[in-house]
Length: 396
Image (cartoon, rainbow, N blue to C red):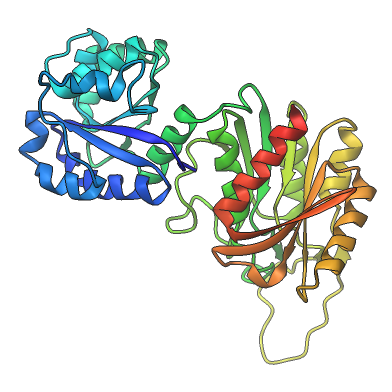
């Protein structure tokens, strides 16, 4: 997601600066190159040597005759984006007032004047974040095109956003915004059909691929609606089920019928649909009470609606991307099944994937069009980016 992106990381004197080392590592894991700039207050919380180790580069702790701020954030500077994380109330106010009396605020002034994208991740106590002057400063800086990553309000503190949220905001700010202005609906997860109050019919999908597609589309500038079915079957908002999805309009569902209703509603004003959810093909009439164990049991299965067919009927011109999971790992069979779905529902393209990787972080798939089938093998995050790139071509 951040491959080839140069990130100037501004670190200020919030206690959240202790997280800077891991944040820098995470940015680099995602492909970015990172150079850090620190205020004197930040140096009192985390040592520049630790930040140097985390970034793999020398740390700027003062502005000298080498005009480090221009070299990093000037019009011909090194940085593709300036990330200030954490940003204190003091720093936010100074940026809003064009006061540049620290290395970080001097870089911010330079970046804003040079049209270098700026991302700010505030961190402070909640009463400071709620101060009218701080909120006014945030509004003012946002009006200049600066992206703020909302903090997590917990325990009376406006805690710095998660690394996932910050990395995604950086990717969006530094990206090619090829999907800017587009509304993309993504379905994800595994629908679950109740048998009784404690048992369900479901499948092994983790929802990782759909969430990766949603992230990749957001990073390219799209407004994303994520219709997410249960996983496990736990709600995607439950702790430990998924990462931070604050970037999307998330609509949580469980049953296939609920997913269909939510998708039809979201698709009404969408520019594209990526149908990555693993939908239960059958449902049963649920019992009102728990079925007692120990005896034999017969269930009468009824087919669930074909979501993409229903959406296609309601939206004849909507570009729709389908997913088709097959067992056995035979590429020819995967392509044949994908093309049947492609033709039946009039899809833009179909991602045919090996069902054996359900729930795993790595995947193997084929991007199938009417006259082409190109392979993909790698992480589900990488597949999400591939789907977003194909969607850019489709909507161009």
